[in-house]
Amino acid sequence: MKKVLLVLGLGLAIMSCSKEQIDTTAPVITLKGGSPTAERKGNIYRDEGAIAIDNVDGDLSSYITVTNLVNTSILGTYNVIYRVTDNAGNVSEATRVVHVFN
Image 1: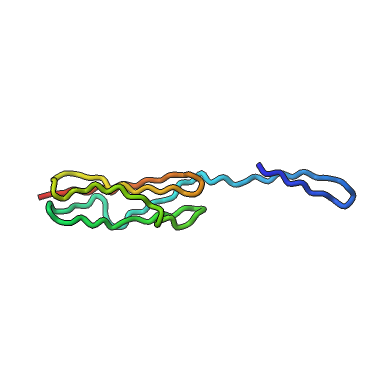
Image 2: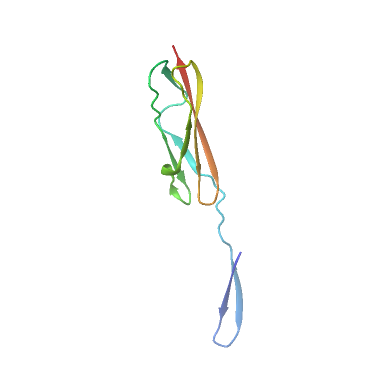
């Protein structure tokens, strides 16, 4: 809580308190393209990316980190994980599921 001291011309002092607004809301990550998605074995997987918007910090898309371990030479299901943190330390994650098929 921030305290502000106001001094009046007669030497009187009044204390007033103002509440600092605390950001407790995590950013929202929106995937571009679908999830789940599928890719044929042997093809090149091109991730469509994501955007991140925060209610205080605005567009955080350029700060998204992506963990993408999709291996199209091996059949299976993979997760692409998007993560972003706003200036208040609120973290958000989103996951895209990718199926590699024959």
